[in-house]
Amino acid sequence: MARDTSLFSGRPSELIGRQVAGYRIEREIGRGGMAVVYRARDLRLERTVALKLLAPELARNDTFRSRFTHESRTAAAIDHPHIVPVFEAGETDGVLYIAMRYVAGSDLRHLLDREGPLPPGTALRIAAQVASALDAAHEHGLVHRDVKPGNILVARGTDSDHPEHVYLTDFGLTKKSLSLTGFTTVGQFVGTLDYVAPEQISGKPVDARCDVYGFACVVYECLAGHPPFRRDDDMALLWAHQYDEPPPLTEARPDLAAAVDTVFADALAKSPDRRQDSCLAFVAELRAAVAGGTGAGHVPTEVDLRVAGARAEPADAGEPRGRAAAQPSKGRATAEPSSKESAGRVTAEPSRESGRYEPKPPPRWAEPVFRR
Image 1 (spheres, helix red, strand yellow):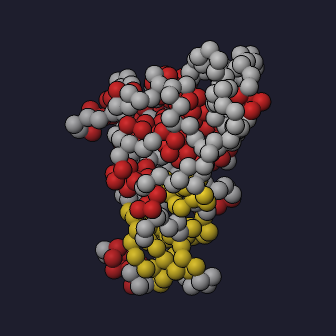
Image 2 (cartoon, rainbow, N blue to C red; image 1 turned 90 degrees about the vertical axis):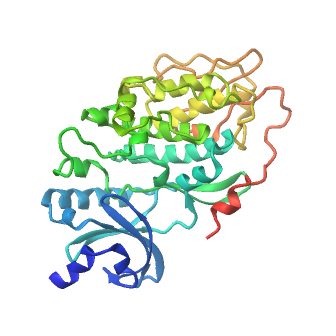
């Protein structure tokens, strides 16, 4: 036992070619403070997987190990097209591991580093997919707490209208486990500084609205080319998340309608009560705000003519958050879709005679993203 466990105490590269829990490790594909992710071969089912190996000290904490088992099972039970499926989770030779689907392609971090600000239509397509994944996880009682571009995988889509398929990953280890087991102390938090919610920093209880904040930071970066807050040191950045107002997105993207600034001001509010109730609600408001401008950011999807042909009705008193992100101009109707419908609905100009937008070719970055 001691001899095998010592394999994990050296450099991660020493595991290349080794067999761990029925998986042959091929190469490293990612790493974080508490884990290393490898591309590996499942020797039982003859398939390629992503194998995450957690730091050995985590397995020595009984409370963490128990929560890890519970949360991994919960994550594995979520069947959602935009959440990376968990195949197996367990412990071998004193090391906890998670086997997940291997997604060929890139991640949003590399995409943004290479391309900079994305076109509004591309950003909205990606955002809608991530939002649906986050909301599905929230319905199962999981809060991600570390939404960031590096945890958003971008794979090849199905056609020119959907050139990318997006997956949210890192749900097999929710950050609550660490905070409850002594791996974070008073005044610390688990999360990435550019996307961390104010309540995480202050140590207050968090819920799904914590992910709304982090997700909004990611979408802001997709459109602006940088996160909402940029400071010279970590302490200044933490202070900004807690006390400074986010700069209007339109300062970096004057081509967007001013209404987008209101949407982000709500999503990035210091108080969770001021934020949108769900990630899909945030995307719906953002889509409406973008469409209220020049229309350049329309997502290529089918338009509901019954909605497009009628003037927008006031929200019912019983509906949550009766707030419209953008005030429509005369002659324009805006749809206030429910959170579940928002991923496939856009606002439209009533003057359009066609009920569908013409398909558009994949964006210029599509091919480099999927080049292995």
